[in-house]
Image (tube, rainbow, N blue to C red; front, top):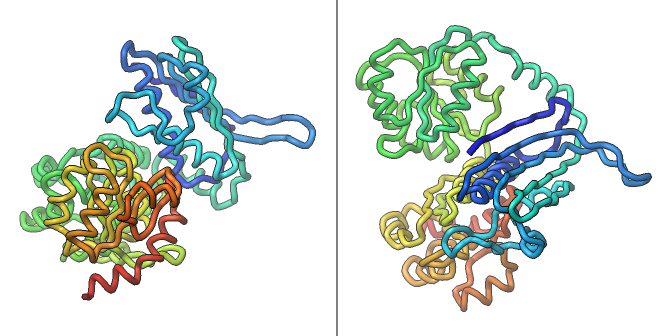
Length: 416
Protein backbone atom coordinates (compact mmCIF):
# COMPACT_ATOMS: atom_id res chain seq x y z
CA UNK A 1 0.00 0.00 0.00
CA UNK A 2 1.35 3.41 -0.98
CA UNK A 3 0.82 6.74 0.80
CA UNK A 4 0.85 10.05 -1.07
CA UNK A 5 0.65 13.41 0.74
CA UNK A 6 0.11 16.77 -0.96
CA UNK A 7 -0.22 19.57 1.60
CA UNK A 8 -0.88 23.11 0.44
CA UNK A 9 1.00 25.57 2.72
CA UNK A 10 -1.64 28.19 1.87
CA UNK A 11 -4.59 26.05 2.97
CA UNK A 12 -4.81 28.20 6.09
CA UNK A 13 -5.90 27.73 9.70
CA UNK A 14 -9.09 26.20 11.09
CA UNK A 15 -10.61 26.18 14.57
CA UNK A 16 -10.80 22.52 15.65
CA UNK A 17 -9.68 20.54 18.68
CA UNK A 18 -6.46 18.66 17.73
CA UNK A 19 -7.85 15.47 19.24
CA UNK A 20 -10.95 15.71 17.04
CA UNK A 21 -8.80 16.40 14.00
CA UNK A 22 -6.88 13.24 14.82
CA UNK A 23 -10.17 11.32 15.00
CA UNK A 24 -11.20 12.60 11.57
CA UNK A 25 -7.94 11.71 9.84
CA UNK A 26 -7.44 8.32 11.47
CA UNK A 27 -11.01 7.19 10.78
CA UNK A 28 -10.81 8.25 7.14
CA UNK A 29 -7.41 6.58 6.72
CA UNK A 30 -8.63 3.34 8.33
CA UNK A 31 -11.66 3.21 6.05
CA UNK A 32 -9.42 3.76 3.03
CA UNK A 33 -7.06 1.02 4.19
CA UNK A 34 -9.95 -1.44 4.58
CA UNK A 35 -11.25 -0.57 1.10
CA UNK A 36 -7.86 -1.57 -0.35
CA UNK A 37 -7.31 -4.63 1.84
CA UNK A 38 -7.68 -7.18 -0.96
CA UNK A 39 -5.45 -5.77 -3.70
CA UNK A 40 -3.59 -2.86 -2.12
CA UNK A 41 -3.48 0.56 -3.71
CA UNK A 42 -2.75 4.19 -2.97
CA UNK A 43 -3.97 6.32 -0.09
CA UNK A 44 -3.75 10.04 -0.90
CA UNK A 45 -4.17 12.89 1.59
CA UNK A 46 -4.24 16.42 0.17
CA UNK A 47 -5.14 19.86 1.47
CA UNK A 48 -6.04 23.05 -0.38
CA UNK A 49 -7.80 26.37 0.09
CA UNK A 50 -11.28 26.63 -1.41
CA UNK A 51 -12.82 30.04 -2.12
CA UNK A 52 -15.64 31.44 -4.19
CA UNK A 53 -19.27 30.36 -4.36
CA UNK A 54 -22.42 32.18 -5.35
CA UNK A 55 -23.56 35.62 -4.22
CA UNK A 56 -24.64 35.44 -0.59
CA UNK A 57 -23.02 32.02 -0.22
CA UNK A 58 -19.32 32.79 -0.46
CA UNK A 59 -16.96 30.34 1.13
CA UNK A 60 -13.42 30.44 2.38
CA UNK A 61 -12.50 26.98 3.55
CA UNK A 62 -9.60 24.62 4.05
CA UNK A 63 -10.33 21.34 2.33
CA UNK A 64 -8.88 17.95 3.24
CA UNK A 65 -9.29 15.25 0.60
CA UNK A 66 -8.67 11.61 1.57
CA UNK A 67 -8.69 9.32 -1.48
CA UNK A 68 -8.15 5.61 -2.02
CA UNK A 69 -7.97 3.38 -5.08
CA UNK A 70 -9.99 0.61 -3.45
CA UNK A 71 -13.31 -1.12 -4.06
CA UNK A 72 -15.48 2.02 -4.05
CA UNK A 73 -19.10 2.32 -2.92
CA UNK A 74 -22.43 1.69 -4.58
CA UNK A 75 -25.00 4.46 -4.59
CA UNK A 76 -26.95 2.79 -1.76
CA UNK A 77 -23.87 2.39 0.43
CA UNK A 78 -22.78 5.96 -0.31
CA UNK A 79 -26.20 7.33 0.73
CA UNK A 80 -25.99 5.57 4.11
CA UNK A 81 -22.26 5.93 4.81
CA UNK A 82 -22.70 8.51 7.58
CA UNK A 83 -25.44 6.61 9.45
CA UNK A 84 -24.38 5.43 12.94
CA UNK A 85 -23.78 1.66 13.07
CA UNK A 86 -24.18 1.21 9.30
CA UNK A 87 -21.36 -0.97 8.03
CA UNK A 88 -20.63 -3.29 5.12
CA UNK A 89 -18.08 -5.25 7.16
CA UNK A 90 -18.66 -8.66 8.68
CA UNK A 91 -20.00 -8.83 12.21
CA UNK A 92 -17.22 -8.12 14.68
CA UNK A 93 -15.00 -6.48 12.04
CA UNK A 94 -16.31 -2.94 12.46
CA UNK A 95 -18.74 -0.82 14.45
CA UNK A 96 -20.09 1.40 11.68
CA UNK A 97 -19.23 4.45 13.78
CA UNK A 98 -16.13 5.74 11.97
CA UNK A 99 -17.74 7.90 9.29
CA UNK A 100 -20.60 8.83 11.61
CA UNK A 101 -18.07 10.21 14.10
CA UNK A 102 -16.29 12.11 11.34
CA UNK A 103 -19.57 13.57 10.09
CA UNK A 104 -20.54 14.65 13.61
CA UNK A 105 -17.20 16.34 14.31
CA UNK A 106 -17.13 18.17 10.98
CA UNK A 107 -20.70 19.45 11.11
CA UNK A 108 -20.38 20.53 14.76
CA UNK A 109 -17.77 23.12 13.81
CA UNK A 110 -19.67 24.35 10.75
CA UNK A 111 -17.87 22.27 8.14
CA UNK A 112 -19.16 20.04 5.35
CA UNK A 113 -18.25 16.55 4.19
CA UNK A 114 -18.94 14.82 0.90
CA UNK A 115 -18.23 11.50 -0.81
CA UNK A 116 -17.30 10.84 -4.42
CA UNK A 117 -17.13 7.11 -5.07
CA UNK A 118 -17.58 4.62 -7.89
CA UNK A 119 -17.55 0.82 -7.49
CA UNK A 120 -14.18 -0.53 -8.53
CA UNK A 121 -12.63 2.93 -8.92
CA UNK A 122 -12.06 4.09 -5.37
CA UNK A 123 -13.41 6.75 -3.05
CA UNK A 124 -12.62 10.38 -2.25
CA UNK A 125 -13.95 12.01 0.90
CA UNK A 126 -13.68 15.79 0.99
CA UNK A 127 -13.87 17.64 4.31
CA UNK A 128 -14.22 21.43 4.15
CA UNK A 129 -13.63 23.43 7.33
CA UNK A 130 -14.11 27.21 7.71
CA UNK A 131 -10.82 29.08 7.61
CA UNK A 132 -9.90 31.55 10.34
CA UNK A 133 -7.32 34.31 10.41
CA UNK A 134 -4.40 33.21 12.61
CA UNK A 135 -3.83 35.35 15.68
CA UNK A 136 -0.42 36.97 16.26
CA UNK A 137 0.17 34.32 18.94
CA UNK A 138 -0.56 31.53 16.47
CA UNK A 139 1.77 33.12 13.93
CA UNK A 140 4.54 33.27 16.50
CA UNK A 141 3.96 29.60 17.33
CA UNK A 142 4.16 28.71 13.64
CA UNK A 143 7.36 30.70 13.34
CA UNK A 144 8.82 28.93 16.38
CA UNK A 145 7.84 25.54 14.97
CA UNK A 146 9.70 26.35 11.79
CA UNK A 147 13.03 26.97 13.50
CA UNK A 148 15.53 24.21 12.93
CA UNK A 149 17.64 24.71 16.03
CA UNK A 150 17.54 26.67 19.27
CA UNK A 151 18.57 26.21 22.89
CA UNK A 152 18.39 22.41 22.48
CA UNK A 153 21.12 22.17 19.82
CA UNK A 154 23.42 19.25 20.67
CA UNK A 155 21.24 17.99 23.54
CA UNK A 156 21.18 14.18 23.79
CA UNK A 157 17.65 12.85 24.44
CA UNK A 158 16.49 9.24 24.74
CA UNK A 159 12.79 8.94 23.73
CA UNK A 160 10.89 5.94 25.14
CA UNK A 161 7.38 5.09 23.91
CA UNK A 162 5.77 1.79 22.88
CA UNK A 163 3.69 3.53 20.18
CA UNK A 164 5.91 3.84 17.12
CA UNK A 165 4.00 6.75 15.61
CA UNK A 166 4.25 8.87 18.76
CA UNK A 167 7.89 7.92 19.26
CA UNK A 168 8.80 8.91 15.70
CA UNK A 169 6.96 12.25 15.84
CA UNK A 170 8.56 13.22 19.16
CA UNK A 171 12.00 12.17 17.93
CA UNK A 172 11.62 14.05 14.64
CA UNK A 173 10.47 17.20 16.47
CA UNK A 174 13.51 17.13 18.74
CA UNK A 175 15.90 16.38 15.87
CA UNK A 176 14.51 19.46 14.07
CA UNK A 177 15.48 21.46 17.16
CA UNK A 178 19.05 20.23 16.94
CA UNK A 179 18.88 17.36 19.45
CA UNK A 180 20.76 14.10 19.12
CA UNK A 181 17.97 11.55 19.67
CA UNK A 182 17.92 7.87 20.53
CA UNK A 183 14.73 5.81 20.74
CA UNK A 184 13.43 2.74 22.57
CA UNK A 185 10.12 0.92 22.25
CA UNK A 186 9.89 -0.19 25.88
CA UNK A 187 11.29 0.59 29.31
CA UNK A 188 13.12 -2.74 29.32
CA UNK A 189 14.83 -1.80 26.05
CA UNK A 190 15.54 1.74 27.27
CA UNK A 191 17.24 0.77 30.56
CA UNK A 192 20.56 -0.54 29.14
CA UNK A 193 20.62 2.19 26.49
CA UNK A 194 20.16 4.92 29.12
CA UNK A 195 22.85 3.43 31.39
CA UNK A 196 25.27 2.58 28.59
CA UNK A 197 25.57 6.02 27.00
CA UNK A 198 25.69 9.67 28.06
CA UNK A 199 22.24 11.29 27.89
CA UNK A 200 21.17 14.77 28.92
CA UNK A 201 17.51 13.71 29.28
CA UNK A 202 15.30 10.63 29.17
CA UNK A 203 11.79 11.38 27.85
CA UNK A 204 9.47 8.44 28.56
CA UNK A 205 5.81 7.55 28.19
CA UNK A 206 4.18 6.40 31.44
CA UNK A 207 1.79 3.61 30.39
CA UNK A 208 3.63 0.86 28.50
CA UNK A 209 3.40 -2.95 28.47
CA UNK A 210 5.70 -4.48 31.06
CA UNK A 211 7.71 -1.90 32.96
CA UNK A 212 6.00 1.51 33.18
CA UNK A 213 7.69 4.87 32.80
CA UNK A 214 7.45 5.45 36.55
CA UNK A 215 9.15 2.11 37.20
CA UNK A 216 11.83 3.05 34.67
CA UNK A 217 12.54 6.24 36.64
CA UNK A 218 13.04 4.25 39.85
CA UNK A 219 15.30 1.71 38.15
CA UNK A 220 17.41 4.46 36.60
CA UNK A 221 17.81 6.20 39.95
CA UNK A 222 18.73 2.91 41.65
CA UNK A 223 21.47 2.45 39.03
CA UNK A 224 22.84 5.94 39.62
CA UNK A 225 21.46 7.70 36.51
CA UNK A 226 21.76 11.40 37.42
CA UNK A 227 20.37 13.21 34.36
CA UNK A 228 16.80 14.60 34.31
CA UNK A 229 13.86 12.42 33.32
CA UNK A 230 10.63 13.80 31.84
CA UNK A 231 7.47 11.68 31.69
CA UNK A 232 4.66 12.12 29.16
CA UNK A 233 1.15 10.72 29.55
CA UNK A 234 -2.51 11.16 28.68
CA UNK A 235 -3.46 10.03 32.19
CA UNK A 236 -4.06 12.31 35.14
CA UNK A 237 -0.82 13.86 36.38
CA UNK A 238 -1.80 13.72 40.07
CA UNK A 239 -2.45 9.98 39.91
CA UNK A 240 0.94 9.37 38.34
CA UNK A 241 2.59 11.59 40.94
CA UNK A 242 1.02 9.51 43.77
CA UNK A 243 3.07 6.49 42.67
CA UNK A 244 6.19 8.43 41.74
CA UNK A 245 8.10 9.59 44.80
CA UNK A 246 10.82 11.18 42.64
CA UNK A 247 8.44 14.03 41.65
CA UNK A 248 9.36 13.55 38.02
CA UNK A 249 7.86 16.28 35.82
CA UNK A 250 4.95 15.17 33.61
CA UNK A 251 4.08 16.47 30.14
CA UNK A 252 0.37 15.93 29.47
CA UNK A 253 -0.65 14.33 26.15
CA UNK A 254 -1.74 15.46 23.65
CA UNK A 255 0.81 18.28 23.36
CA UNK A 256 1.86 20.73 20.69
CA UNK A 257 5.40 21.22 19.42
CA UNK A 258 6.04 24.33 21.51
CA UNK A 259 4.77 22.54 24.65
CA UNK A 260 7.12 19.60 24.07
CA UNK A 261 10.10 21.87 23.44
CA UNK A 262 9.26 24.04 26.45
CA UNK A 263 8.92 21.04 28.76
CA UNK A 264 12.25 19.60 27.62
CA UNK A 265 13.97 22.97 28.07
CA UNK A 266 12.48 23.38 31.55
CA UNK A 267 13.41 19.85 32.63
CA UNK A 268 16.99 20.44 31.48
CA UNK A 269 17.20 23.84 33.16
CA UNK A 270 15.64 23.06 36.52
CA UNK A 271 15.96 19.30 36.95
CA UNK A 272 13.08 17.15 38.15
CA UNK A 273 11.79 19.29 41.01
CA UNK A 274 10.08 21.89 38.82
CA UNK A 275 6.60 23.24 38.26
CA UNK A 276 5.72 20.52 35.78
CA UNK A 277 5.44 18.04 38.63
CA UNK A 278 2.52 20.01 40.05
CA UNK A 279 -0.77 18.83 38.53
CA UNK A 280 -2.50 21.56 36.53
CA UNK A 281 -5.85 22.83 37.72
CA UNK A 282 -8.83 21.07 36.09
CA UNK A 283 -9.72 23.03 32.92
CA UNK A 284 -12.89 25.02 32.43
CA UNK A 285 -14.80 23.92 35.49
CA UNK A 286 -13.90 20.24 35.16
CA UNK A 287 -14.41 18.08 38.24
CA UNK A 288 -11.40 16.90 40.20
CA UNK A 289 -9.86 13.58 39.21
CA UNK A 290 -12.15 10.56 39.06
CA UNK A 291 -10.99 6.98 38.60
CA UNK A 292 -12.70 5.62 35.50
CA UNK A 293 -12.87 2.25 33.73
CA UNK A 294 -13.42 2.83 29.99
CA UNK A 295 -14.70 -0.10 27.90
CA UNK A 296 -14.87 -0.03 24.09
CA UNK A 297 -14.09 -2.79 21.60
CA UNK A 298 -12.84 -0.22 19.07
CA UNK A 299 -9.15 0.39 20.04
CA UNK A 300 -9.00 3.79 18.34
CA UNK A 301 -12.15 5.07 20.08
CA UNK A 302 -10.84 3.65 23.37
CA UNK A 303 -7.53 5.45 22.99
CA UNK A 304 -9.13 8.76 22.06
CA UNK A 305 -11.64 8.54 24.92
CA UNK A 306 -8.87 7.86 27.42
CA UNK A 307 -6.87 10.79 26.04
CA UNK A 308 -9.89 13.09 26.33
CA UNK A 309 -10.49 12.01 29.95
CA UNK A 310 -6.80 12.46 30.71
CA UNK A 311 -6.95 16.01 29.39
CA UNK A 312 -9.85 16.65 31.77
CA UNK A 313 -7.68 15.46 34.68
CA UNK A 314 -9.10 11.97 35.23
CA UNK A 315 -7.32 8.66 35.75
CA UNK A 316 -8.29 5.84 33.34
CA UNK A 317 -8.16 2.07 33.23
CA UNK A 318 -9.00 0.89 29.71
CA UNK A 319 -10.38 -2.35 28.29
CA UNK A 320 -10.92 -3.20 24.61
CA UNK A 321 -12.31 -6.70 25.27
CA UNK A 322 -15.67 -6.64 27.10
CA UNK A 323 -15.12 -10.28 28.07
CA UNK A 324 -12.35 -9.11 30.45
CA UNK A 325 -14.60 -6.65 32.29
CA UNK A 326 -15.84 -9.03 35.03
CA UNK A 327 -12.26 -9.88 36.06
CA UNK A 328 -11.19 -6.22 35.91
CA UNK A 329 -14.10 -5.14 38.08
CA UNK A 330 -13.42 -7.89 40.60
CA UNK A 331 -9.80 -6.79 40.89
CA UNK A 332 -10.17 -3.00 40.69
CA UNK A 333 -13.70 -2.03 41.81
CA UNK A 334 -12.42 -0.66 45.13
CA UNK A 335 -10.21 1.77 43.16
CA UNK A 336 -12.89 2.93 40.71
CA UNK A 337 -15.52 5.67 40.76
CA UNK A 338 -17.09 5.42 37.29
CA UNK A 339 -17.51 2.88 34.49
CA UNK A 340 -17.94 4.31 30.97
CA UNK A 341 -18.87 1.63 28.45
CA UNK A 342 -19.78 1.49 24.79
CA UNK A 343 -23.21 -0.01 24.14
CA UNK A 344 -22.80 -2.17 21.01
CA UNK A 345 -20.01 -4.71 21.54
CA UNK A 346 -19.56 -8.42 20.80
CA UNK A 347 -20.01 -10.70 23.78
CA UNK A 348 -20.89 -8.48 26.72
CA UNK A 349 -22.87 -5.42 25.66
CA UNK A 350 -22.98 -2.14 27.50
CA UNK A 351 -26.32 -3.21 28.99
CA UNK A 352 -24.69 -6.39 30.33
CA UNK A 353 -21.91 -4.40 31.96
CA UNK A 354 -24.39 -1.98 33.54
CA UNK A 355 -26.39 -4.96 34.86
CA UNK A 356 -23.20 -6.50 36.28
CA UNK A 357 -22.34 -3.27 38.09
CA UNK A 358 -25.88 -2.91 39.41
CA UNK A 359 -25.80 -6.45 40.79
CA UNK A 360 -22.27 -6.80 42.17
CA UNK A 361 -20.90 -3.25 42.47
CA UNK A 362 -23.86 -0.94 43.13
CA UNK A 363 -21.57 1.82 44.35
CA UNK A 364 -20.04 2.36 40.90
CA UNK A 365 -21.47 5.11 38.71
CA UNK A 366 -22.29 3.75 35.23
CA UNK A 367 -22.34 5.66 31.95
CA UNK A 368 -23.11 4.35 28.45
CA UNK A 369 -21.55 5.97 25.37
CA UNK A 370 -23.57 5.39 22.22
CA UNK A 371 -24.92 6.79 18.99
CA UNK A 372 -28.41 5.89 20.17
CA UNK A 373 -30.68 8.49 21.77
CA UNK A 374 -31.32 8.52 25.54
CA UNK A 375 -34.81 7.03 25.17
CA UNK A 376 -33.45 4.24 22.96
CA UNK A 377 -30.73 3.44 25.50
CA UNK A 378 -33.31 3.23 28.28
CA UNK A 379 -35.37 0.80 26.22
CA UNK A 380 -32.37 -1.27 25.13
CA UNK A 381 -30.90 -1.63 28.63
CA UNK A 382 -34.11 -3.36 29.76
CA UNK A 383 -34.40 -1.82 33.21
CA UNK A 384 -30.66 -1.58 33.93
CA UNK A 385 -30.60 2.12 33.12
CA UNK A 386 -27.15 3.74 33.44
CA UNK A 387 -26.64 6.78 35.64
CA UNK A 388 -25.87 8.86 32.54
CA UNK A 389 -25.45 8.54 28.78
CA UNK A 390 -22.84 10.08 26.49
CA UNK A 391 -23.67 10.77 22.83
CA UNK A 392 -21.13 9.66 20.25
CA UNK A 393 -18.99 11.19 18.89
CA UNK A 394 -17.77 12.30 22.31
CA UNK A 395 -17.02 15.96 22.88
CA UNK A 396 -15.05 17.48 25.72
CA UNK A 397 -18.01 19.63 26.78
CA UNK A 398 -20.43 16.67 26.90
CA UNK A 399 -18.02 14.48 28.87
CA UNK A 400 -17.19 17.24 31.34
CA UNK A 401 -20.89 17.99 31.89
CA UNK A 402 -21.85 14.34 32.35
CA UNK A 403 -19.07 13.68 34.85
CA UNK A 404 -19.92 16.84 36.78
CA UNK A 405 -23.47 15.51 37.05
CA UNK A 406 -22.39 12.25 38.71
CA UNK A 407 -19.40 13.55 40.68
CA UNK A 408 -21.23 13.98 43.97
CA UNK A 409 -22.45 10.38 43.97
CA UNK A 410 -19.00 9.12 42.96
CA UNK A 411 -17.39 11.06 45.83
CA UNK A 412 -19.97 9.77 48.29
CA UNK A 413 -19.32 6.18 47.15
CA UNK A 414 -15.56 6.62 47.47
CA UNK A 415 -15.78 7.84 51.08
CA UNK A 416 -18.47 5.36 52.18
